[in-house]
Length: 437
Image (cartoon, rainbow, N blue to C red; front, side):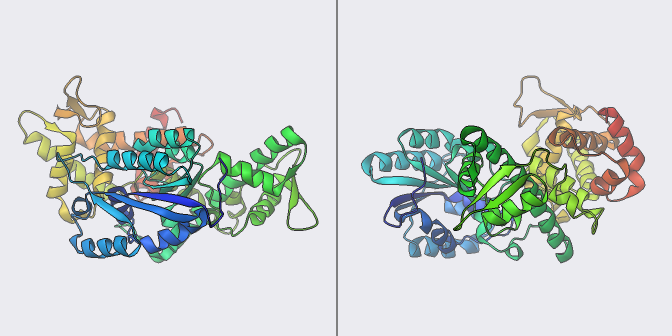
């Protein structure tokens, strides 16, 4: 269904408050409902505004946020329903949100746009039902890394909460230097630009095959359908015309300007095999590929990979805990005990879990048969701890080779990225040979 940007249209907002708070605070974003409401004004009058979740549970590590968030909810006229936890790990906030959204859709048939603020793919059935009822669904995820791909594609349009903030307002819990942060921002925007230029080429190809001529408006509309989370700001662009010019520079399309504001686009017969990233390599030959590899790993892991010193600290703590535990220990329990053992290491919970889970999947531990896949019971050490990092590195290289087969695997460069120095080049070369690269 096409989006209605008429200011007289009515829309409904539903916020998964715990999901918003937890994922936003991971990257240091404030909970700013004013910015959110202003951004959503383009979808019409927000006649219904609902929020669900256990606020105290969501801010348990930052209790000072309780009053500011409650005040912001009241100021923005968002009706919040506290849904307490019935067990340690689960409440029914998502069910309450689904029930309320469906109730609103039947009670107010004139509300055509439903806006869902969450990165949780558990809402996919709700999105499917709303679209079946003829409603338009706008998703608001927190970050690209924290949002499931199927959830994005299920929506008619998708935006990211982090896009409401300037880059200098986004801080991870382990911030790099200012220069490194700025470099990473530039590199990621180039990667997104590459992606959008190729997407534009696909859109122009599809429109030309269907109708022979492709206007800029037709190409942009199809790109929106193919990628609901299309956001030109993430590529460092301010308008679609700028994207078309970038794609023309790469030899992907040709622009034919028309009277008025629109223009025609056509495919080139043989696009040049060049990317926006490659065009920047003359000035910065080494940093671009390295940052791209780091970005791919972070995107796949949904967290920033841990550097070698922190990994070795975790291995030592995990080995000690497993050897001192009788009767086995659950993976999540091991994670919690390791965090308690190394509180000053600056390691995030999800980073630690991904590391332990990765080496578990690579055979580091003896586990109970038929146990939970994501929280197995570990009985003993199967692979000597001094080889655990090799298991991790093999897993990371496998991720890279599957995610982007075109990446040139160089042991020396990967040793710097994954281990911090070229001293590990021989180890990385051995890992590459083990996965057939």
